[in-house]
Image (cartoon, rainbow, N blue to C red; front, side):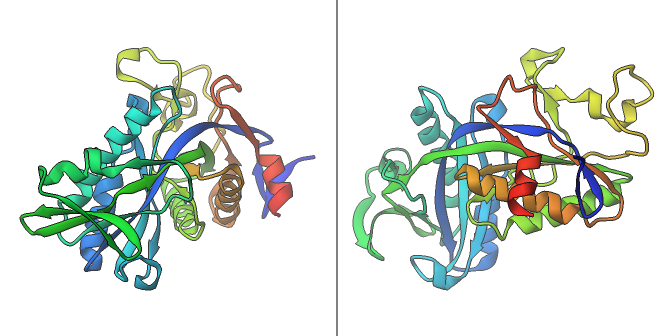
Length: 302
């Protein structure tokens, strides 16, 4: 039976997703513009392909939702699940919080991961106080108060981490850049309403593939699906009439929330004029631990 949503064909395929380790934390600040600077700064560069970390904003919080009653945001940082993930996670959290959050005036950081497993933020972040930092209990949490030239930076001492699922994705085959941008923007906005997911690349314009002519630089362009190569290569997989193929890449704190997010991405885009087909990327099942079938998602959430 053919798949479709709101009259738009959906490929009967699957995406490959991966086990990952995430840390979910709250950033707060005195003013919204300071909060945005810190939240965007701490999560701006997705870079897991280099064995580092991937970040994104989960959702924005009102003052009534934060521990200290100020403007807030929940951010996520992800690393690959490996034997040495803890070393990578603590290093990457240190870099992103120290260079993205601590340097923005009035900011604070609190744990938002529902997990028994935690790391000690005093070791790689609190010690920015050069030994002059101290621990107190504030807002019902153990925090480290780090003296800085602007005043102080406060971070909860123990920040949680847990296992989630990364790399869920949806592709849109569109008749123009305009329809691709409209579909992508609607999807990214809709995901902001789902607690526990991030799309660290936003509207991703450059899907990659595992094989490459230049392994020293990492993954390269997925040439089979580049519209500008359609009439230049014999193995193009770009359908007629397709001018742009954006990808929405999603990480979720569990498989259920990831599947829900994938459905939402399909459903909102299927209502956009110019979206000719919806699909998902995979590598023949060779890389990811999870196969998430679009048919199963549609049957579960429609």
